[in-house]
Length: 275
Image (cartoon, rainbow, N blue to C red; front, side, top):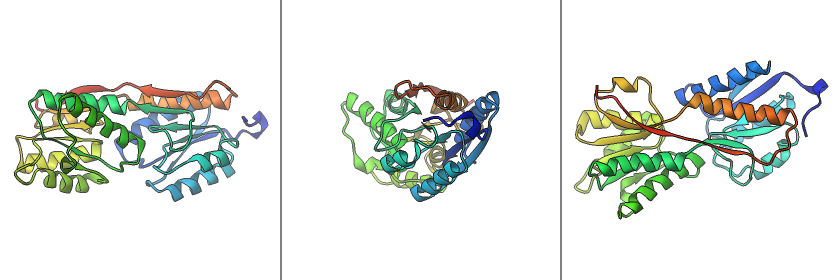
């Protein structure tokens, strides 16, 4: 139920993983644009991938009577938390849909983007394509791995767990994972990285030790066009992702009773670097 006008605080909140990551920065810019249009102040908080921290933060924001919440959920089941909080403030999930509930969300085409990137690597003759990803329980990672598997299946290739490295976080972790996948006689000849930080770590190892390895990544990386090698990257408009989620939230704040909206934003494969 929407809050009455006399209860409004002229604030909305955005709860994300890491405000320093360019991906989240772009989303924040889009949300700020729409919030200003509606004369709201934006509060930004970070979960740090902790469900406990997410719960504490959301409960605190609801106690402060924010007019609405935009949330990037952790991998945990959100059914109980959503039942507790959703009737107190409208809530829209951004970048991934939460586990355990059907609710408003705006996400990227993770399956399609990864599928297109891996097909590109296959078209270059690769048959041992490594995959490096984060938490497999998070919706974005699960979708991207599904796209990877679909591309392999269409090419008549098996899914080989020896070529897959999961629960990898940050640039340093990606460097270690890439080094392992590129070692030994049955090593990967190409790598798909499922986010921008992982892609950076992979590129560091490849450029140092394996210059002949092809790399594709999900998310653009900063200064990508200055990379010394061509890299296939799944790109999208992060600012638009923030805008669309904020626009949906403000419809709910105004009292919209339309059915649950699950918006899927398209992605594009682009070649970066090597110029």
